[in-house]
Amino acid sequence: MNFKSLIRDVPDFPKEGVIFKDITLLLQNPKALKETANALYKLLEGQKIDKVVGMESRGFIFGPILAKKLNAGFVPVRKPGKLPSKTLSETYDLEYGTDTLEIHIDGIEKGDRVLIHDDVLATGGTAKATCRLIEKLGGEIVQLNFLIELTFLEGGSKINNYPVKSLVKY
Image (cartoon, rainbow, N blue to C red; front, side, top):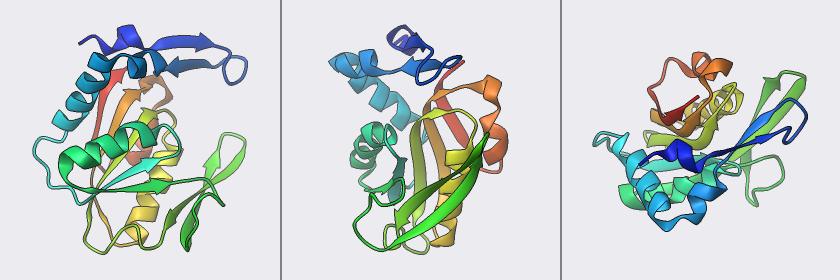
């Protein structure tokens, strides 16, 4: 399937100068949704996974689907104040300022084999912060999966000590 044909560019969103990769056309197409989930699953090459971690918010789309296919649990990573129980936080640098992510402290158990999934790998800050959260809780990162990788932003360089796989690269 040509996934790129179902990903549209939206200029100047969310701010001027950004070309947003919109996956809603892909999500609206039942065949494409199924094919995307299957293709993301195939990127794992038979790996044993205990937990799938998805980052807010579009990592919540395919993350639970992958967890179901893998017979694994799903763990959300969210912005501060969005998770209802005790959390662990990780603050990371942005181009201008900082941001913070949180995970439930009981979301990952020591020795859990973890797949991290998000829709887009851009600058790599969110992915790197998520890796740090998982490792602080004792999880083992098996792989990071992305639907889209924006290679020109070189986000993979921030997480290059982990296996990283993407379906579509720009």
